[in-house]
Image 1 (cartoon, helix red, strand yellow):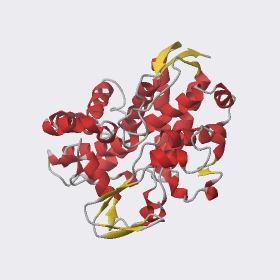
Image 2 (cartoon, helix red, strand yellow):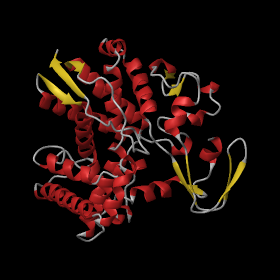
Image 3 (cartoon, one colour):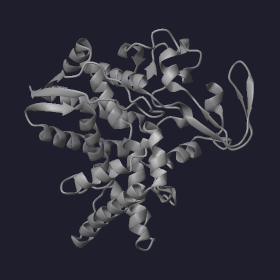
Image 4 (tube, one colour):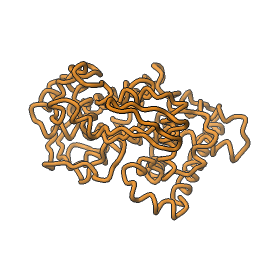
Length: 370
């Protein structure tokens, strides 16, 4: 694992391997000529802005719930993720009715995570020429074009990330400009939100299955909640980190050295090593974390055998934001409502080969305002 992570990107590319995987679902033009990238999103100043948007998104989600009823955990967190992402880089106009519902539907049609959540469905997507996905991308471009046009007609220019993206396309002629803005927004949204909603969902599910752990969170223990989020991501991790060999490389697995030729794809098996690299890892235990690190990391044969957000240069740039988002969301939900699981066991979707697990069945939860 150390050798795998140490391979230079120019010799074995994670970016190319991920792109090839996503292209099984997403239109090729979505990856061409991008001017805004995920690493542009998560500086300290930007994260503070997203957290403000998160608070507003949570408030709207709670308003929708009312005083009591039944929610499905992963549907609720998925809607929250869409709302947060759209408000953060598509303008508050996009995260509110009447545009919200149509944009959520089209972003779900464009969900690149399907390439690794439901890989067996991708042959049908290719056979259809990705018509559904291209139509969704076109409709999103129309909506974002309307948002920006309305701002110009009203003589205002919001100080938000949508305007930053639009400025990067200022020299392009129409329709390339609006299509380019939409492509940037969509790819940022898919890259940033596709696993966050699932991570929030599993954090809630695992707490609801363990009354003593939930009681600690209800009592206000946010340090424990932070650790619980890390633990849920570890257990729900289904990632097979991919590296596409660009040149002939040597990979030492600790027992022997392999000669790997170009176009061979290397992969980790985090769904296995995350729960088997040391005794006890198969069990849920938030106390095994200190901040973002495993308490007993030094006891692992290699620290890379257990991962939540990756390691080194390939670590997720949104780690701090994601953990903050999970903690704030769960905190607001348990402070506002008494929650009761109406499910017993939860199974991950069996065919998934990447990302944070999706649940195979609904996870209904009864809620009542405190």
